[in-house]
Image (tube, rainbow, N blue to C red):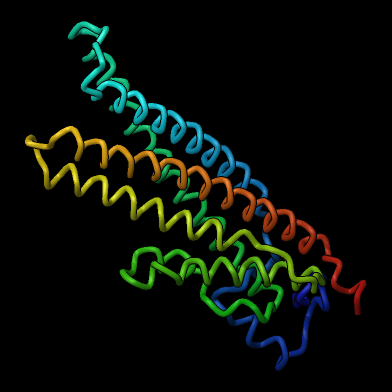
Length: 249
């Protein structure tokens, strides 16, 4: 079965020569483009949960800033402080769990989206589906290659639907906030680690500042990514139904 760039079936048998490349490509779904709706639904739940917990992290930072203020009279006994510490630890581990759950779901989403573009013969699909995920784990390249892969997915989807008007993709906002999240959190962790038990109040406040900023840009990054995935998911549903590119031919 051969598919056109808009997802519509061109022929059931195809020409032996013209269809050879797509028929033998390991990136092509032989049964046609696959739905992204299920993956997006779970990814959306995960990203919403992540944003909610990041909000709690930001509020936690504000609470700790107040608690460390020299003028603050702590109204809690030791038992209550231990419970607060346990609650903060729970929030941190919940955030880590949600992060990796979202990472897994987004990886599956981008992998399948890129394979869909290969399946319909998109000219924008240049990065292999595996490397849309793999570049996240390669030092230095992970600073720009994942965004490049997402850009190919977004613009390949739009082109397959016949969209030619240049509109914002949301990728610059997502990727900038994603990088800032990692940088600010790393700085906060290094400040605390290098200072150790001897960390003074002013240094601790600097660390709190970077942690709070990390939460804010983390929320913005997750929101922007959710918008991108929503657009791609809707576009691929149209592609699976035949797309609209033929209307403009």
